[in-house]
Each structure stands twice: as C-alpha cells, then as structure tokens.
Image 1 (cartoon, rainbow, N blue to C red):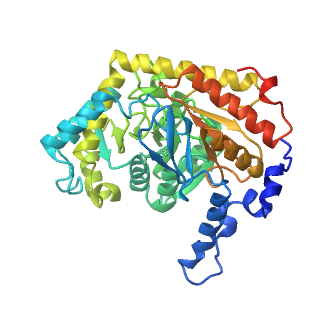
Image 2: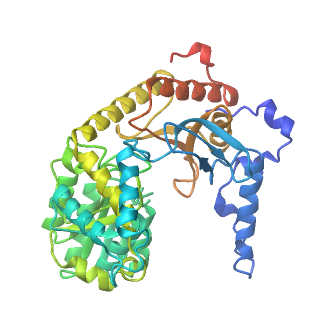
Image 3: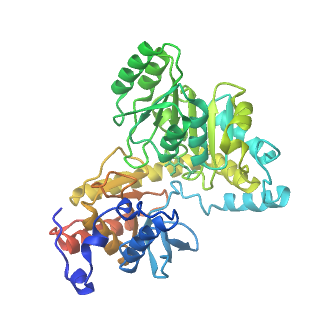
Length: 445
Ligand SMILES: Cc1ncc(COP(=O)(O)O)c(C=O)c1O
C-alpha cells in the first residue's frame, strides 16, 4: 500500500517519523545504567502515540464484552463500536449459565484458592474440571494451571533440561519460546509448519546423541497466522525418532471440530499427541490452562517440580466453575450451534474482505489476519477504524516481524451479518482515507 500523508496528520503537525514508524525496541535505553530508567523512553514513545490516537493498546472496556463494546484508552479518551478485538469465540462471556455458575461456586466454595496446587490450592471444582477435561480430551491425566501462559512455559521448561534439545516452530507462542529459552536445553527453531525441517533436525540430533531427550513444540492453530501443521505426520516423525511432541491448542479447542475438540479432532488426532496444552482464555470464558498426557503420574511430578505449579496459587473455584460450565455448553448441542454460527461468520467476513480487495491470510478460524501495510499505514488505518466505531487489534513487532503489521480480527458466534458489513465498510473507509484505494461507494458490502 502507498502511504499518502493525509491532511489530518499535517494539521496535527506530527513528528510523524517518530510515532508512525519504528518499534518498541528502538526506544529502549540500553545505555542507561539505571535499570528502571531504561524503560521510560519506551513509555514516553507509547504515550506520544496514545496522545495522537496512534496507540491502540492497553484499552479498558466498560460493561460487558460482546459483539459491540465501549471503553476508554489509558488517557481517558472514549471509544465504542463493533468489536472484533476480543477472544470470546463462542460468545460465552456473559452467558447466563456461566454467570449463575459463578454465584453458586462462590456460595459453595468461596472465591479464593488460597494456596498453590502443590499444597491445598486445588478444590472440589478443580478436581471435577480435571476429570471433565480428561474425558473430553481423551487423555488419562489433565493438570490445571493458573493461566495458559504458565502451562506452556512451565511444561516446556520442566520437560527439557540442560543436555536435551528443543525443536520449536519459529512462530510458536511466547510462553513456549520463553520456556524453551529458560530450560537450559539446546533450542533449534524450525521454519513455520515445516515437518520436513523437524525431521532433518531429529535425524541430525539423534545421530550425534542417540540418548538425548528431544522435545518438539508447535501449536494446533497459530494464534497470529491462523494456520496449522499436519499433526499426524509430525507425531509419526517424533515417534520414529524418539522425540516427545508437545502441541498448544489454545485457539481452536472448544470452537473448532464437530464436537469442539479443535484441530486435533479435525485431523483425527484426539488423544494421540504425546503432550497437549491449552488455555481457557479464548473459548472457555475464563482464565486458566492445562497440560494433558496419557501418563498418570506426570501431574504429581509437576506439582513438585514445575515452577508455575509449585510456586504460584492455583485457579480459584470461581474460574474452575466457569470453565466447567463452559465445557458443558461446548459439549451440548448449543455448542455445536455456536460453532456453526462462528464458522459462518468467519466465512462471510473473509469473503467480504476478499471481495473488497483486502488480503487475508491463513485458514478459516476465529482468527482472521488482514494485511494492512507498513507501520505507518497500519497505525493510521487503525486510528481511523477506532474513531469510526470499529475496534480491531493491531499486531506489531515484537508479536510479528518489524515490517509485517496486520489486523488480527477475532470473530464471535454472536456477531451479526450487519456488524460484519459495518466492519468491512469502515475498513474500506479507513483505507480510502489513508491510502490511494477505492472509497466505500465503489465497494460492495
Ligand atoms: C497460542 C497461545 N498459547 C498460550 C497462550 C496463553 O494463554 P493465557 O491467556 O491463558 O495465558 C496464548 C494467549 O495469548 C496463546 O495465544
């Protein structure tokens, strides 16, 4: 896209290069000896962006998260509009059954876990939740974590040790990457989704070190790119070379597959991957995460030897009750209806974007990545959207490569066709205002 410097910017007399270009790392003052002051130029840069409406981050919602939303930026400026920026794929966040489950769990169990799961932080609700997920996922043992992040970080760091090897997709989530970096194992990053590259790594490692432990790490649905590896083939490669496969199903569990068991169900792999981890913060309307295996006993070992099990408080009874009720809906006919509505909305949104000249990437899922050009174009278009009543997530470095800003639209079961039309119209208007592109009159929705 060609960036045309719009009048609006000239009128604001922006030091445009500073706020429109560059990334967060450019502002970190590594030369400063005071470790806290090093970060203050970073905050200043974001504040300058925020004052000009060019920082779409750190927003506070008001009221409920739903297909529409209102709230404030951190400088107090209000926003409202259609909401394509929340992770509530089946629209369960205000579901009456979940709201009621909170009340009854609070009355029966109180609101606090009051300890780590190594001690007495587990409760009746968390026990029920672990058992329900064991049945749903077809794994012998499911262990809860306080968040998905701690599950991913904790299990990678615990399984692979100094002297072992981790072979990890280049684009795997930060929790998995940081777990790998902190494990002390040798880390090999392979090109995104390339099973062939994994095979080559395993052959090389095995021939040099026949007895080394090897952990292969990937996701079932990549959270930025909305694409998936061929899991059966990858598991077969791992088994052939004596490596353990770990996959993260945070974004597809519950909202994809005939019965909600995600990409593993779509690919005929339910219960067949060595280690599965996931999050409750996308479809299950809460926070929390889990690790699942076919080996009874790993949970007991994790509770003693995995930092985010041992040294942090367990999920509260409230969170466990919400996830349990969300799982009941996911497994009900209502879950199937909601998944169908979500899939129809995704197909319609992608079709409308394509017909109007936007480039979407990846495979159909609740995540729809839309290319929006370089940093400057992306920031200006995002500001235009927000001011015009369309709330989208702008993904920038370090979540993606420096030059690759995009919108990560997140679709919900409860979005109406008219709201999707509204979003696409506003995207067309934003493009017309910022770039040399057709105006809304020339486009279809
Ligand atoms: C792929 C993936 N794994 C793990 C997580 C962490 O999940 P949680 O939000 O439950 O900490 C996320 C959330 O951003 C994610 O996208």
